[in-house]
Image (tube, rainbow, N blue to C red; front, side):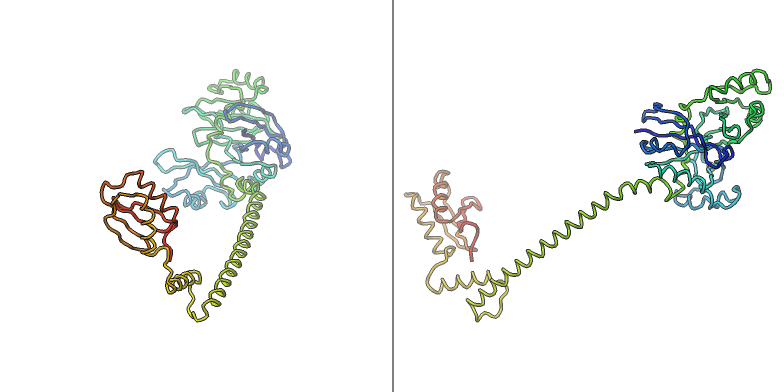
Length: 414
């Protein structure tokens, strides 16, 4: 995955409202530079769509960094309170600006608040989203310069109307200016703004020939060190730069684009769920109709067999009960009655000739309980007895030491 970094020129240095050339760099996850160049923002569609994230480095002259006394508030309350906190330092209505607060450095309550024109930033972010950007960030360019405590970092870059000066004074302080195209005037302005602090000035290699003699020949420019400008230090600082102004755009941020990518898959998933729900309900209705039909047929059969029955709660259970009662009235014993179970047990135990092992018999819950004398039945004899009972559709289980339970296979029958 890659990240696309774009240095957008200052509005004051652009002639026709849109930058004709934006320096860009494509960087891998490990920080390695894969591609660099300069192109109009509208011509970067392929790189924008193929990158995991697009980071705009907004010109320092377009982003104002304010130092504001911030009370201890939660993130949500601080966001709501920011317009009131910066109202006295912002020209115009704070609602027309995007406000983003930087992390706290100390315990004095002072925080840096980045301010940028909302309408202008929305145009840039929406242009990137329209080209297929997955995620968009926007950070002040002045906070993307290398910084060493006790010194000032600066960069001069050419624009459509002259030079852009970017200055960083501390971790969360910096500003920018749009200057004319005269190198000497730009250096004097830089020296005046930096005060007596040493300055690290980053210039493109092609600009060194014009600036190096001036630095060597003008004593008042002492303390200005000329360094080569390249993407490595911009990217290194931008990866951890804060605050991110794109987060203050709300619905205009890249998260909206992320949801749009899932719009059709989500619709298909909902459609699949609806189809399955409708199918399950149709199957349930069919099975319910079948169950109602079976229940009605059982009720009609029961009424035909027992027309005098007025209360019918469970036709199947009442039918079994009536059949058992009819058999008992006719002199037929049920297979799970005491006498039937005793007779079947006696026949099965006849194969164990010469063994007097029964201590007591009891009948409970349609089952015969046999108390066995200790040490009279070994494993082989018990296996033989179980087989004989199984042949008579009875099962034997040992419910306690020396105690058997004999009942019809599959549980008691009523």
